Length: 291
View 1 (cartoon, rainbow, N blue to C red):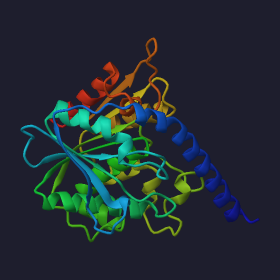
View 2 (cartoon, helix red, strand yellow):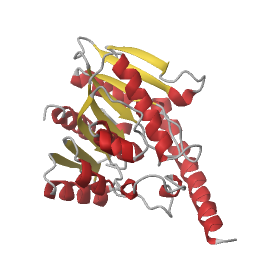
View 3 (cartoon, rainbow, N blue to C red):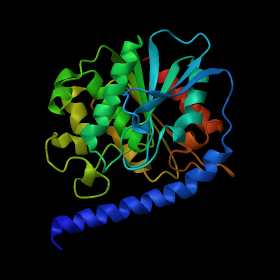
View 4 (cartoon, rainbow, N blue to C red):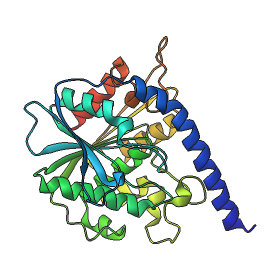
C-alpha cells in the first residue's frame, strides 16, 4: 500500500470511529431535548430544490423579529457528520433571547463533497435568504461549524477571497456583521482527518488550513470565541483569541468553567443552552452583533 492509500485508509478509519462515537452521545441527548415555545418554526425548507435533506434549512422566527437580520447557524461534526437537528434547541434559544431570526442549515458532508462543496452549499443558503430580504447576517457554528462560520463571515464580506476560493459566481447582496465560533477549530492539516478531505485536488488557497492566514489577507468582522475548560479545542481557541487581538480584530473570549455536575465539555453550549454557561455563551454572541 502506497503512502496516499495509507492516508486515505487512516482518514476513513478515523471518520467511521468519530461518527460511531457521535451517534452514541447525540442520540440520547436529542431524545431528551425540550424545545422552547414562543417561536414561529419552519422546518425542512429547501434552499436547493433537489429532493435531498442535504439542502434543507429550518427558520426560527421570534415575535417582532428584527427585520432583515438573521443568524446563520452551522452545525458541527468534523465536516463528516451531523445535521441541523443537532443545533435545533440551541438555535431556538438564540432566537428567543436575541429577537433575531435564526436559520439552521444542513450541508453536504465529506467525503461526499469537499470544503469547496460545503462552502457552495452555505453560500447557496445565503443566496436563498437574501432573496427572502435578509441583508444583515451573523454567523454562528460549533466545532467544524465554528470553522465554517468564521470562514463564511470572512468570505461574505470579501469578493476577492470568494474568487480565490472558487466562489466567484456568488454575488452576495448582504453583509456579515459578526461571527461566533463555539469550540471551533480554525486549523486543519491536509494529511490528517478531517483536513485530508478538504481539497485533494489542490485547487483552493493554502490558507484553508489556517484561517489566521486568511484573516491577515482579507480581514474579519467582530468575533466572539467561546470554549470550555474541558473542551479538547480549548488551547486552539485561546491561541486564536490571542492572535486575533494582535491583528487588531475586534474579539472577545469566554471559557466556561466546570462546576459540580455541569462539565464544560466540547460544544457544551449546543448540548445545554439553558445552563448558566450556555446562556452566557448565547448572550455574548448577541452582544457581539452590536459591535
